Image (tube, rainbow, N blue to C red; front, side, top):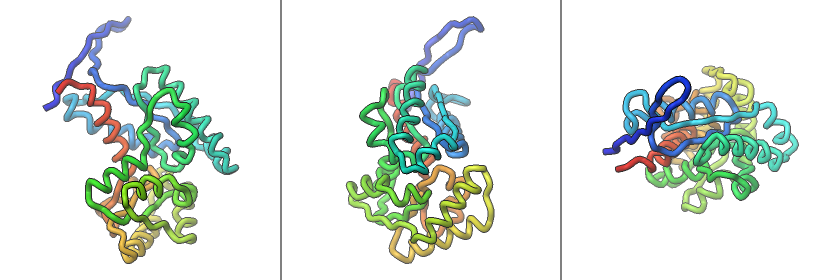
Length: 252
């Protein structure tokens, strides 16, 4: 069982306790996905830190609109520059490592990781590890058109011997519209749910044994209870991986 070690810190307002765990830095992009990731870290910290406890967490976000400007120009280095600016702010705030609860902008990671002031957990690698642990061999990919057209997931999946299927072109367009017109704004509709279910049913017929919820807002709409396939929730998987890494600093 984990034991919680605390240190006392004095400040102008008195004395506070802080567990000796690693400080998580969240590089946010879209608000709904970043909020879900943050909430998951906090809610699932209690087994390690006691009631209402969780590791120290800092988050910095530029607006989704700022990210879309370079993304729409296919300028992934420009996207990476925003991520690195957030990374430096979080490092200055004391973060020990970084996560980004946005699948799409992981396209900039080959540019970001070598220049980063702190190490990162890569969302697609976390999902690939979870797929292996659960015995899945062929995954359906869902996400923005940028994400499913990219190599963000194929590279780590192929490296682990996992097959994958992408949405068809018309499916990609429909999912992309739902993400940017509805999900990032916190709107969930029955029509959007039915669209995802049709895509996932087709993937199931093609032999997929699970589906990656590869936009961090998709778990707000789709889950194991309404999906034709078992889901790999990239948002919560990343949050849990960050929590596991953070508590590695706690004494056993």
